[in-house]
Structures are given as C-alpha cells and as structure tokens.
Length: 384
Image (tube, rainbow, N blue to C red; front, top):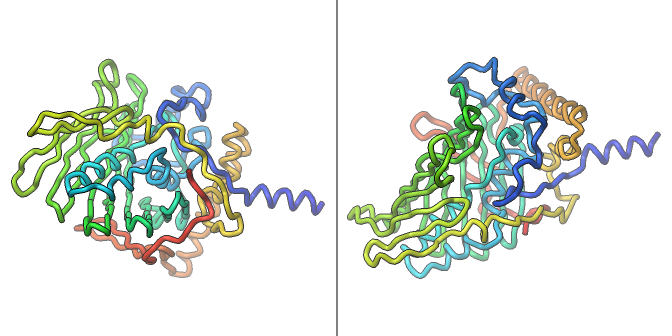
C-alpha cells in the first residue's frame, strides 16, 4: 500500500519538460483526430465578438505547455546568441539593427487547432541558459497578465515584459491581440529598447491556418532610432509568400529612413541600406530557432511548487501519452483547486499579491510590472 501511495505522489509532483516549437517541426505532433470538425463543434455556441480569455478548452485542444512557458521560450530557446550580438554592436545603429533581429526571433511557430494552458494565478517559470536567467510569473488570472524578468550579469543585460493577451472570436476566426510592453536594456551602453508584439490570427474558415499579423514598433529613446515592422500573410493564406515582414528603420529626429526591412520571419529577413543600396541578412530563422532542445532539470529540490512544468506535469504527461481521460481528470483537478482558492480569498477579503513583481494597472498606462529583485537568480531548469 505504501509503495502505491509513494508512486502516486511521485506522479503528482513530476516535472515534465517539453521541446520548444522549432522551424520545420511537424505541426501534427499534438493534433487530435478530426481536428477541424472538433473545433467547429467547440465554437458553435460562441458568439462573434466574444472575449475568449475565460473560455476553457478540453485537453484535446491543448499542447503540453503553459502560455507562461511559451513566453519564456521565445527569450531563452535559441540556437545562437542574438543578445550578445546586440550588446557587441560597435555603434547605436548596429546595436539597434541587432535588436530588431532579436525581436523577430521572439516570433515562434504556432500549431493550428491546439493552444497552451491558461496559466494559474501565481504560476512561475524559471529557466537559465548560460548566464541568462529568466523568471516569469502569472500576476493576474482575469484578465490574464504575465510578467517576465530576465537578466544576464555577465553581459549586463536586462529584460522586462508585461504581456496581456486578449483573444476574441470573429465568427470564422480568432484574433489574439497581445497587449503590453516589452523592454530590453543594454546597460553597458545606457540604452533601453521598447517594443510590442504582433497578434496571433487563427483562421478556421474558409482555409484553416494560423499566422502572426499586425504592426510592431521598436524604439530607442537614447539613440532616437525607430523601427516600424508589419507582419502579414497572403490573402486567406492561399498562394504567394507566407509569414512576411516588411518595414523600415529610421531616425526619429530627422525622419530619414536608414534601412528598409524585408523578408519572412520563418526564413530570412534582410535590410537594405538606403544610402548604398547594399542588402544584407540580419536574421536567419533556421539558424536561430530550428533544432531546439528540450531543457533539463538540474536540481529537482530547488523547483518551486508554482513552476509551470510541475503544476501541469501530470496533465502534460497524459497529453503526450494521448491518455485523454487521465488528461481530463488532471485538468479538472487543477481548475477546481483554483476556483476553491479564489473563493477562499474572496470570503476572507484578501487580495492576491505577486511574489516577484510590483503590479499596477491604470486606464492610461495599462498593466505595468516591475521586478522586485535586481538580478534573477540561477534556475534549476537549464536550457541549451
């Protein structure tokens, strides 16, 4: 009897780490059978214009990863060190162009018909890659808001993000606008770069597909440089080039265009020097986000109880095993526990407080998340 209890306890506390999505990876890894029919059945009672942030997906429509992990992977899961290139640029324009390339690298493949888990309140994701330490926390559940803090003491680099996705159903498609600010600081150069995220567009009919679309602006107040990028695809995803990026880099003080940006975020992106006409590649997706490896657990004892890979471990393992009944039960237990905790806080008049960020919200500025610690500590989960 004791052996059985110990085995069950071990299963419940297992950390399950999964491989990041890569360019060229098959998109049917986690697909359920008859996917399109299942999606249409799922959405038939959802009204156009509905906010989907409270919409609960059955495990059939989840892949074994939390949204918090997806945000983190876009920062630490790379095959080459773009952040060092940003830091080592010889002049502001070189550094700015490298930051544009790094920003593009955070755009990752998505799989049609499946979505990550909605993180629970207080969930964390803590990973190290080399000297870069990354910590995320779900600082609000309704609406869903995630905060990210990443630091590299050796490179003297800091990142602070505050992400607020807002998915809405439009009848034949879902568009998830990602509100919030991303900030990258190159402290050796006294430069801070602010940027936003494109939107995720999921088309159900007439041609199923999933794309990143919209405008991304990147600016550096210290140098006065600005990039305006447009993510787009061909009409209805039919014919022509897909996953396009077009834009420009210019000096905000003179409005002089320095570079034209052109390419595909899942292939190569180039800049054309407006003075010389010279074209060069600044980003190659196959070099940066292909063949990504699964992180490893270095120190199980140091894993927080709130770590994504632990919170969702049992559910993730069930999905990977395609054991849908076990997955349904595992997800139900997590969701019911969160409802119970929310009711307990409400009955006591308590307000949940983030452990790693100071969080504020206003109509003028939206959600803002300031990290409590100056430097993120090394993590028990290691990425390569």
